[in-house]
Every structure is written in C-alpha cells, then in structure tokens.
Amino acid sequence: MNFGMETELIEFKKTTGELKEGIISLASMLNKNGKGTLYFGVRNDGEILGQQIGDRTLREISQGIANAIKPQIIPTIIVELCDDKNVIRVTAEGDEKPYSAYGKYYMRSADEDREISPQQLRSLMLSVSDSIVNIEANNQELSFDQLKMLYVGNNLTLRENTFEQNLNLLTRDGAYNLMAAILADSNSYSIKVAVFRGTDKTDLVKRNEYGYKCMLVAVKQVLDYMEALNDTIVDVGGSLRKESRLFDFPCFREAWLNACLHNRWSRQTPPAVYMFEDRIEVISVGGLPEGLTLEEFYEGKSKPVNLELQQIMVQLDYIEQTGHGVPLIVSKYGKEVFDITENFITVTIPLNRQTKERNDLEKRENELLDSKDEEILILMNKNSSISVSEISRQIDLGTTTLTKRIRRLKEEGFVERKGSKKKGQWIVTKRFCV
Image (cartoon, rainbow, N blue to C red):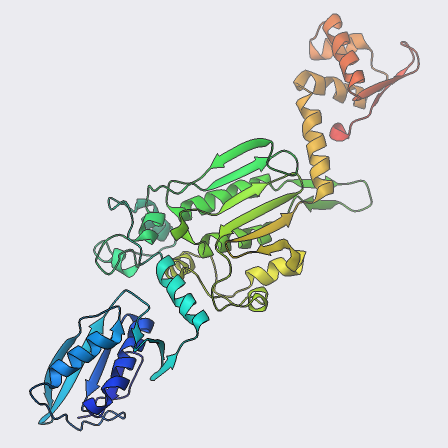
C-alpha cells in the first residue's frame, strides 16, 4: 500500500523524531487551507515504514502541538494499521488564522512549508479579518428570493437544500455570513448615487437610494440609472452627423463593478457614486489588496478581495475574469483618474464638458417653454411673416395673452422681430426647432 504524494493538505514524516518539522507543516497547512493531515511512519514518497509507539508517544505529539502552535488547536490523533504496520495520523482544523509554530509563521505551497514575511503575515491577517465568508452576519433571518431570480434569469438552477453551502453563504459553524447578508433580500447596506450642482459637495441636487436589497440587484439598478443619465448630443452643423456622450459608459461600468466586487464590506461602508458638473466619482472602501503592486494593478492583474463573491458575479455574467477593466479605463483616461490610498480607491470619470454644457443649456431653455410657446416658435420658424392674429387663430389663444407670451419669448432670447409690424419678419434664434 502506498499513501501517494504529499500535497497542500497532507504531510508525511518517517518517525516522530521529526515531530518539530511535522508541527511546522501542520501550522503551515492550517494557514493555507484551515485544515491539514500529518502522518508519522510514512516516507515522503508515500511508502509506509511504520512507527514505533510507546506509552507516551501519542501524548508527546499532543503536548508538542499544544506547546508549539498558537493559537492553540485540539488535533485528532489516532493509530492506524496499514500493511501490518502502525501509522500515526494527526488531523486538525482551525479558523483562527494566522497560526504560528515555535514563534514563526509558515504557509503551505504544494508540499513545502515556507516561512512568510511580515508583509505576507499582515496580508494573511487582513484577509482573515476582512473575509466576508468568515464574518457572521448580525441578522440570521435572511431570505434570498432576489438572488434566486438572478440565477433563474441566467438559466441556472439552485438546489434549495444545498445552494447556501454551494454559494459559500455560511460560516464554518453553519451561520449566515456577511456575504449572505450582502446578497439577502433585505439588509442594512445603503447604496447611493448622489448628484451635486457644481464641482463640490456643497449643493446636493438629488440622492437616489438603491440599497437595502440584494447587492447584485442594486448594482444593476445603479448601472441602469447612470446609463439613463448618459445623454447623447447630436451635432448636425457640419457635413457629417456627429454624436457625443456625456461619459464613457463601458469605463463607468467597469469602475462600478470593480468597486462592488473589491469593496471591504467588513468595514460596513458600501461603494458609492457621486456625480458632479464635470465628473463622476466611483468610490470603494479599502486600498489595493496586499501583495498586489500598483503596476500590476494598472496591468489588469487581479487579486480579488472577495473571491467567493467574484465566483457568483462570474456565474451571473456581471463580470469576466479577463482583468480588462482597469486597462480599459487607463487606455481611455490615463492612470491619473485612479486615486488609491490605504483606505479608499476613487475612480474619476470626466464628463464631456461641451456635451454637458449644451445639454444643460437646452434643459434650461426647455424648462422656460410650455407647449403653447413651442407652437408659437414652430409657426414663426415655418413662416417668418406670419401675423399675430394668424398665430392666435391657429393655436386658439387670445391675442392679448399671445402678445404677452411673444414679449417674454423676446426677452428670453428665443425670437427677434426684424422690420415693421406689418412687413417685418420673425427670427427664431434658438436651435430646438431647427
């Protein structure tokens, strides 16, 4: 009989004379996978050698693990008979990473135990403390009808009795975790789009609330709203028809989806969108993931903060694992649109200032007009010599009221009168009816 090869979950030692090395391997596997199995009496190629067992052998293993590994774990230690030879099997599980062995920290890589640097240790500690699958949700009365409908809409089936485990919505203890709360039908996370007048936050025009529901539903609603705000201006002044948009929507989409995916949800602050006169800001909580350099970030190399959430978003076609989002934004606007600090990542999408100014002007102009005003201007534009009495007859409006309206249209700059009252002409100056 042969036990096979060593892996990230299995370590072989010839005898308990290698107890220290075995304990280091056990801590290393716990840091990588949260569990591990250690055999004594097996060669590293899986060949069974057997282990001599005395009165204190198992106790020495137990005490050695208790004294060396911190925080303390309680392993299962049993003797197995394989090919008429005794083998000691030690198994352990733990979710209190990081684990040290003899005062040092190790991480399993294939069948090796590698001592980790202080930076890697910090990364490990952050990943554990911030992991949305390890943090228990405050509310345990959760339902997932909205999430199920998203799967149905993508022709995917969720088994009622297993989907919570399959989607990693439970902690090791079987309680709903933070990711479950984020994806539940009702939660405490407010996702907002705020629109400001001007270039700072002093004058709030509108605040749209999309939160308190399944985060993925709210994400889609934000995208729909921002797409509706992305006005198109058509310029037919030259020989060719030209269209321009207020902002590059594919870039906004990538920035927003990345913000939701990589947000540090454990800090209880959801991502947000702020729209100003000259720009859109997409803000997420948490800086770059530990171990990812700034250059790697700009190249599109991904190190997901929320790996399990990424898997769900890929399944539902929200994102692709191509890493093209950041390079797309950089190619369009440059690296300077990213403001990355230890606690936040802000992506600034510039607005097409010319499009914005023209659009705002037209909106302000149209707010001054009602349907009767538009009828007047249309008639004047079609027939510059039309009389006030003829306009009055065609739009069924009294001449006194009509005269007041024409006076206001002149004052607002919509129309001019050239020449005398009898032989003069109307000049419609605004482009809305051109």
